[in-house]
Image (cartoon, rainbow, N blue to C red):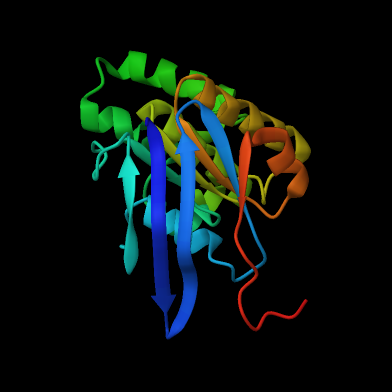
Length: 214
């Protein structure tokens, strides 16, 4: 199949089983939601899907293969400051994929950046600012713009709208739909049932962790 398939994924952290034989199918061209109580392993699962943490058991395959092409995975972290270089402007953060490929010209690159910024609801005049000069929500939208410019095949989202106002949330929802419509496999982790219901074609509910109060 095209997309992401996780089979029997198990992860143990600090002696506690966080994920226990989790299966996930996230087909290309669709949004797959992941829900669950705090501590159920949602973020850990995303890290496994992103290749940032190897599972203790099980496997993950991308478009049927074990390793995805370089640059094909985009991870939208819940806390964008943890994944952005504080010495880079928002323009540099968004343009990282283009810089790796090699932009045709500075003027064309800037025009593309302005278009991407507007698409994710980010004012172009903010592009010359640094992470410390913008809000968490604005920085999250820059990360979303970076994923757009990378034309990622696998888009992994950890609470992507948690720090956004309703208008910006609408922009993000629209862009994630566009990713899926363009054939990407989108995995959305969220505590917001309304967002999951609005966006997701299928939902994986992770079980409540042992010892968690009901």
